[in-house]
Image (cartoon, rainbow, N blue to C red):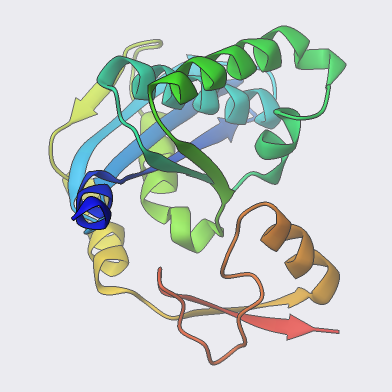
Amino acid sequence: MILVEQLRTWYKFNFDGAFHNDFLHLGISGIIRNNKREWILGYYEKCPTISPIQAELLALRQALQTIIKEKITPCELETDATEVIHFLDEDYPTYSDLIHECRCLMGKAMQQGEIIMKHNFREGNMVAHKMAKEALKYPSYNITLYFAKPPNFAMDVYCKDQEGCDYVRSCSVYACNTLESLGNGNALYGMAQLCTNGISMGLVP
């Protein structure tokens, strides 16, 4: 009975940041789903920024703030940016204040419940990526738009994610081991293995 309750209340939170170099602005997004992959909440926002790394960190900050505000725990927090995961444990002088803020928010969020942060491939984070790209088109900055159901512009990738599509890519053994250490459980599957989120990996020596 306890196991059933844990599965019922477990959430998956994908987030992403999209950087536009020409205009120095970014789109950040987050997608919250339950253990059945059903849509709970989505959002996006356009913000000024100076680099892709800052974009990903701002996306993480927004995700953690949302988790705290909405009490979305326990949850798996997924990103396709390996740097974001590393920065929670390592220092990066350029964005030390932002990284420190993210660490504090992570600690506060974990006081509410269990949070597991993982890496996922872009294909497994495609809905959040699509949302972040769409945020770049929004005319105003620093306004968060929320979506109670999948928006039309992301419906195609959301449906593919629901159905489970088979993606194949090549990756070195070293890279796969690194990604697996960051929580990417799909990184060491064989090329013909269909993973739980619909991604298969091919290993290259």
